[in-house]
Image 1 (cartoon, rainbow, N blue to C red):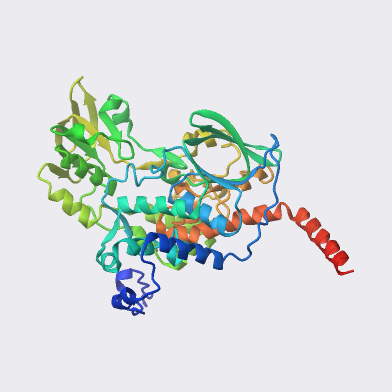
Image 2: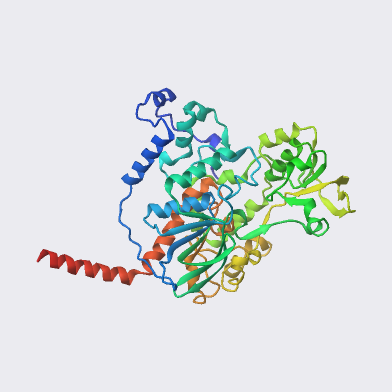
Length: 499
């Protein structure tokens, strides 16, 4: 029996192109920018050089209150929302607004709950620059620290990535409003009425299209087992995504449940602040690999949405079964700390509180602790999103569109929104809610329909062009009669001018 050919897409085993120029050549080049200011000038020139067609083209629509309606409202000011905004600006869709409920600098995880020293992505993955070299992280880094520092850099420091995104937002002039939260949305007179809370003050804005770029919780919530949430006072536990006062844990015992990278990031931080930390996880052995690394090639990243539903389901089920452990560097840090103890193949049966201490019945023995950190991940569940709740009867999920073979069922996959080819929401029943195609889902919950496009840097470079194409298509197609009238008016005025 012939074996199928092996397709190895591990970057470590792929041939690399030779360097076109050496580091010395770069250092001697007189035309390279010498400061961040010079880099910004070059970037502005790049944007000017590729601005064709330069003229604005989107027809303005009036909102019910007489103001111009936004063409696009983007909910979420992290890396996905900012990149989507830049992609739209490149296509001359300029009447847009990005909102984020957090203060400036705390959009997304990088300035809040991302407690690892570096991103887990390779430093040269690109993505948010959308192919513009002078907008890339590397250009921004090298002009400040030099080419040699870039060559010596292992992975992107988390704090540095946060600074880069702040520069990205500023240099591109992306219109962003912080402390602004979407509460409800509804169709109204051909537009989407978006009820916001801006600095806790109600405000309604109207938009022709709405984009959810709301990250890891965009279509669900943090998962915390009930034996934790219902048996412990709220001040005695936290999910890994929540604020944690690590200095206050010094000298105390902290119990961490979960074997993912975020569990160990939090455990390390607690131990480094003087706590005695115990990490319990179910796996017999944690494998320090990221299974999604296999998928980092153009075919999968760009064309996963082109697969039939049954194939997408099979891929998603297979990826879900992989148990991803922390990177090797994270495990080395954890094992180097004498006050951090790892309990493999162990889970918790019960958790009780006696008024002072937390008593955990673990399968490898009892443990008494002062604080619990739940590294128990997230669930995809549209019902827990208040901004989506009133539309759940209209929004199609995978359960509505695809029935897997017996034995291949999966409730969490079936609960995901079933999206069109450009991240647009779809309706449960044809004709029941056509306005939903003006709502685009670029959050992690889109992964079931779109693959890795909205969830990481390697996918963003493929996802944003798809998203932008869907938005611009809708803006043009819905106004096609008005564009046709404009063409006739232009022809008539041109004929008059010739006479």
